[in-house]
Image 1 (cartoon, chains in turn green, brown):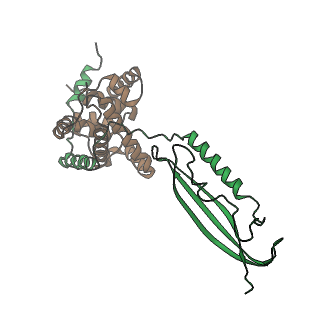
Image 2 (cartoon, rainbow over the protein chains, first blue to last red):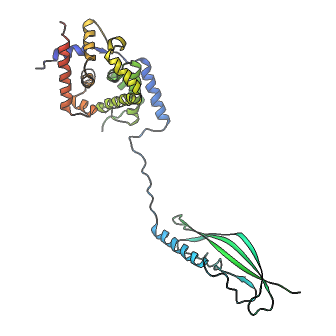
Length: 170
Length: 165
């Protein structure tokens, strides 16, 4: 038998003081505030979207960027075999804008000239007249987009352009 | 599937039944009714927000206990004050029970002298009618430990209080 049954009975006769009437009202307000911040969840939160890099596209992009950087470092001081005209040190814009891959479509090309310098008159070999040499520094940026995945690839590189302007003696 | 408190009226029914016992349990950690009710309010809202089953009473009491301990930790000065108050309870503590006679008052006073570990088990068992398994879950102790604390509490009370015929 339980030795404490009598004592337990005495304890049960003690009546806890009732909660104050406004406690229920306060809880109601608290619950309303919770409801106001959205539906309560049972600890189930939306799953975080994990970042999965597209390694294939990334590798292709890096390869293209390296190619363009190599082209940008070409020797620019060699005069053109033509007597006058434009000495291009980078490929024509149409070339880089070609499709890098079946999935990427060229979408933008910007060319910013940030410095132009007049380097004076020069006499080129075999020419009868001097030419004025103008050197322009630019930054070109090309962008491709992949319509299927929304991925984009942007390549930006510096260029220098030397223009030889014939001087007329007339 | 367990019943889950999902309707506005449900929590009111549950609270009407459990409220006094929850406040009494919270009073084991703080010495004023106002603080105990603050604890119960926060714990009840927290419990509701998680949509726990109201059948899981052990978790409900664990929530009350957690909120109470957080409160004490947040305010160490308050904790010291509560500790000092517990040493001189008769003078400063608001009564936890409604008394019919002096014997009940003596019994309540003897109850206050118990260590808190025993008192919280006794309160959950006597006035909230939790099983030892539920008490163990609430306090994160084994069922046997809960039962032992209960017996120690009764033994201490019996030593300090003579049952009046």
